[in-house]
Image (cartoon, rainbow, N blue to C red; front, side):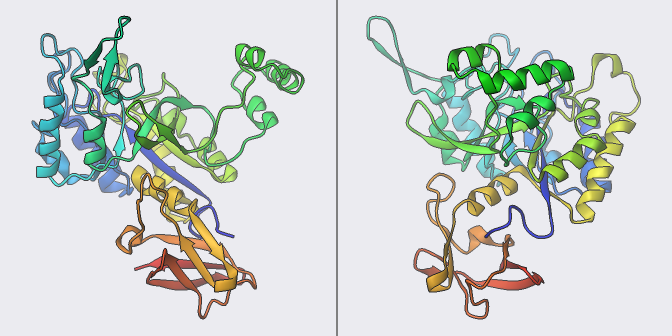
Length: 394
């Protein structure tokens, strides 16, 4: 059986940042601490351009090309077109953004909808994924903000589902008792909800009373209006804590300990460049509590307890892991294409990836083969413990 995460890690952490409100001086402070001092292997999100008249100094690639020193696997839509006054968004803007992305060798795998941008795919609007509209008379109109085909063209396969979860640790099943008893409401109310969950079977009433247990998958396939199938993923946090000060709250030590205990994944929702209005005059951007939280994550990462990576690396791993097929009779392990992220599996798709397995008598490790289709894959085999081995791709 395959382990959830590469040995010896027990859980997986990453950040999906929105670049809203970021000033270049604050970006430099964030870069120096998170990517410099801590050397956390996270990726960042990028605005290609910004036309936001309320945030005229907001960091974006066109005006601040120095930000490319970081890895960017997320684009926060095609740019910031909020509060752009008379300037509207058109598909031609996305075509221009594609050229800029390609010229700068950016390889985004993740899309995150921005605020109430008309070209969003899910969050507040689905116009970006809808090729045409139809009025009450049946007349069809071309949608000039549709760009999902361009989003796929540049390699994006993962899209934020537009919501956030308060469950600590995705990629795991959660029981009714654990879900309701971890609720932030009082223990008495939580107990009542747990009891009602067991007694009420009407879907309508369960929805009305908020008795349904949320889907706790880290990612899942979603079909869009144009017929495209991509993966949606969830983010963890709260709307009120979605800034650099709140980040210290959602990543406090006890929550990271719970993440490890739950053996799950976490994609933290935040705006690293944003701070509360009351803190705008503080001389430093990153508050002490947030620094302590991030240092604790670094400690767990160095201890090889908590895996930390870019969001695309996490999601790629989960997709590949969930498409592993065992054939003991042939002494082979096959990695199958999922036909959303991977149409076929090549050696380069697996470079530097590691998968760990429980060791049993089903396989002869001296002659075991790893394949995709009929193609053998090159790998190194490592015995981790008496009952655990790993395959590491070259």
